[in-house]
Image (cartoon, rainbow over all chains, first blue to last red):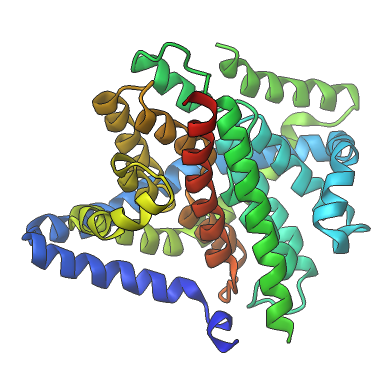
Length: 200
Length: 171
């Protein structure tokens, strides 16, 4: 199973760039492609500036929550779920605290808070990781969890539906729950299965 | 709106709880915030790579090309053709998929079949590439193993489930 041991990101990144070049040749949009390279660079800096603000804010708020013991309360509440998904972290308090804050932020739909809190959890998981270059099983599970949208109220979607004149903007909520729940389950299952295959 | 209450309430509650527990809330905040600044610096290089690739993909017309290729496969799973472009963009670009979602709502109507499927997809997916890049970039992990294929499997499941559940619930 050598092919999954090589980082996929390298291939996908290269593919996107080469594919973009080829499609620009086909569709004749080379000029747009050329200018997108430069605007993309400054967009990245803009994104980092936006992230800088929210990362500082949420790391600061989290620090208060941690020092005051609030994190541990959340972690206790979510402990059964986290123990089930991350059996190896049973006795790792710091990592469990950070993961439970990230889950809480995701469920409440605080997207811009979930990312900084998730990064904090990743730092904790990296501390427990034996090979600092390669992702651990727990990291993979955690990231896949964050790529599925766990949220109670899809507020952005509802707002856009309302703006477009939907009769009942929230009527899709059960479908959203089922779809994101299934995608979460399948993602986690895939990580567990792949992890087993790679051990062999 | 209720949604706008959540974040201010959450921050206020954390601060009040900290005060009750006799934590020096402002010093504590500043100490934590400093770590945020370090993380952003380690993220800038990886994010630049990702954002440039996504910008190139959007500008080149590649999304439309890929859409034509994937349409037959999508119809196998009951995904309406209007929504295919959203499926392609949603793992790659958050702002891009929001724009497409809005245009689907406008063109097909929010209560049409494609409009509803698009709504479910927009609500049930996250920007996969961004999350993978940010989370692994922030701790300097180079070998991400099976994460991306697994996350994309998850995304694909939510596309198919969106089409299926909307059919069940509404038609």
